[in-house]
Structures are given as structure tokens and as C-alpha cells.
Length: 392
Image (cartoon, rainbow, N blue to C red):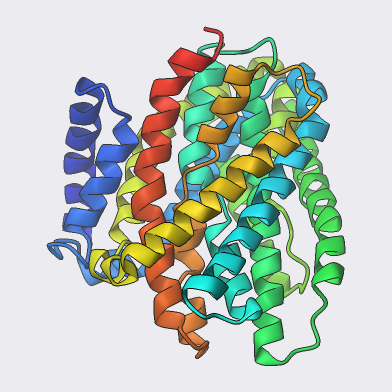
């Protein structure tokens, strides 16, 4: 495993630098590297590394979410709070339904099968979106209207909607008495739970830091340890309700920065250093999950279904931004920033197949294809159009 880690770090740094030299986002280079060295490419990475890949990716995602929490300003949240809630739900639901109906037409799926596929595809990727938005926040891009904060917050809740509704359709397929309406009503509770737990943890940590003289490096480890436990809360207590743990993790950083700004600035800098390492693990290992051969099995129909979903998502974003003070360029950027998919599709794309869902192979193929199409498209789009459409 040590050799695999060395390969990931050395080649990841090289791929990141090379793509930045070409004027492309570095994460795109790391994603492509992951595809090449992963088990479905050249098979260079050792099996042990693939086995712990999900945990490493989660830890890396937690690092960038903590950085995001430290970087969010209270004024920006006040400006974007309600809009972010719309952005987290409407685009996801509209895209999921568009994919469901398209798969009924082109693949002869039932509505329940289509819903399973639709809400696998509908989840936007925080792994791609959050680092990109954080970079814009740090460079004060469109800071007056808080657009990066809006997208960052919306993308972090979007997954809760997608996974909850996916689980409901999966329950309907298996014959369980699951009400999608009931599941949807549980989402606000999961959001409040996630934020509340994150705020409590953040508050306790600030009291600890005030009372004891703890070295900054140890503070980083304490924050990271509590954040990992928070992210695993669903599994530890086996709750049927999905908790918005991504929001909880961001809330920890936000509370510490609000209560102890001087310490928060130092810790934010420390997490920026950790992110140099974590981002390589995250993007290379996400790429390593992509099976090109499976994606190709989806064929042209798969591409049509994914593009149909993106049309639905774009309409959902425009609906969410109706009656806001954003101009048409800024709204168009929000549409582009909501394109990337990777994390959720890699994590749950194979679940229907493993549970014996009819056409599970097709669902997995389209999920993988959605990563191949949308992750590069979204990453390049955010990188290029942030300069063209947003106030610098």
C-alpha cells in the first residue's frame, strides 16, 4: 500500500501541475490519472489501497468541508440562506424526475427503476464543486453577492435530497412500505440535525481551545477527529433518518471562526496545508473508481439520458434563482457550477446491482458514464466561466 500511496502522491502532483500549466483545472488531471492507474485502467494501485479508498476519500472531503466552514462569512450566509435551500432541492428533484421519465422512454424502465437511476444521477459532486467555490471565495470573486457561498452551501445539502429519495425508490422496489412524501418531510429534520450537531461540536471545541493551551497541530487533529466521527454518525447509531453530516462538518469550522477568529485564521491556514495532500488522494481515488468499460456499455442512450438530466437540472437552477438579484451571467454560472457529478455516483452506483435490481448493470453503467461526462465538463466550465461570467 505504501508504494501505491507514493505513486498517487508523485504522479498526482505532476498531473496537477501539468494541467494547471495547460490552463485547465488541476483536479481534472488528477481524476484522469486515477482512471489510468486504477483497477479498471493499468491496475497499478495495490488492492489494499482500493479497499480503503472510500475511507480516504471521505477524510479528504472532510478536510475541504472544514476549510469551507472556516471560509464562510456570516453576512454571505444571511444573503444566500433561503436561495441555497432552493438550490439544494429544486435542481436535484427536477433532474431526478427528468432522468426517470427519460429512462422509461428510452430503456423501458418502470417509474420506480427510473427513480432509482434518476436520483443516483441527480446528486451534484461536493468533491468537485466545494474546492472550486472555496478558491473563488479566497480570491473574493463575486463576493458582493456571495455566489460561491450560495453554490457551496447548496451543493452540500443537494446530496441529502438525492440519497434520501434514492433510498425511498429502492425501498419501493423491494416492496417495503416507504412513502416518498414522508421521506421528503424528513429532509428538513436531517438538515437541522446536521447543523445542530456541528454547531454543538464547534462550540465545545472553542471552549476547549479557550481553556487549554493546545498546539495548533493538535487542534487540527482534534477538529478532524470529531468531524470524522460526525460524518460516521448515521452508521454508528443506525438511524433511519439521513443526517446532513456535510453541513455539520462545515458548521464546526464556521463556529470556530466566528467565536475565535484569531485561532480560526491559523487553523484555516493549517487545513489549507493539509488540503495539498488530501486533494491528491480525493481526486485520484475518485478517478480510480471509474470503470471505462462499464461506462461504454451505456452507449448513446446513456449519453442522451444524462444530457436530459442536465437540462432538467439547469431548469431547476433557473427556477431556484427566480426573483433574485443575480444577473443572467451569474445565473448561467450557477447552472455550469451545478454540472459535476462524481462522489455519490461512485459510492452508490453499484448498490442496485448488488441488491438484484433488474437492469442494475445498466444503472451502474450510466452512473459511471455520468462521472466521465460531467466531472471534466463541470470542472473546466467552472474554471473558465468564473472569469467570464462573475465579477472579479
